Length: 253
Image (cartoon, rainbow, N blue to C red):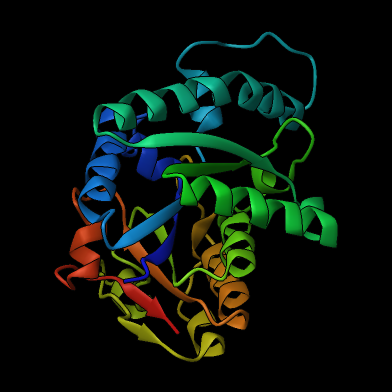
């Protein structure tokens, strides 16, 4: 039986569990679920969190713009982030690899072909590609998006079966329920234009995304016939619970 391929996008808020530090427990939770699912699913991960990882270790002295400081922090934090993934996943019998991409890579046919070939070889050999933006040379996702768009472009390019965007809410809430402080999840979306009216433009505490960037990502995926799920990644067992329909999340078809 051919395995289904999931692209899992993990935002900074999920990885930190809304604290100031990368949560090893959350990374272990993700790894444990992948280990349980590996006979039926293969995973590609797009992970934020390099800047959050760096902030645990350093406070940079600088006179530069904030964006250049964030690029420097990403450069410091990326190896730490990968080490945490590698250590936690290895204990579960999972192997990881690092892929750093930038938007220009998706604009050239040769680069796109190379990305596909490399990721396919990694997955075929039971390595989980962990993708992040190459933040030292690109600033798009640092400024806005928290890797949502990068995840969608990769999902579309790799023709995955499902894009799961892990965030800090139970999917997308109706605007009225959010205002009334009784959040109600929109379970199924087939018209993205209608969805825009339900979404606020506020950002999350660590990430730079917010729901607008997730809807833009879902639109990119949709054009490639990839379904998107927006799931609460703060909760333990969120991938398996979503697959078994045991939790509230938003499906965008």
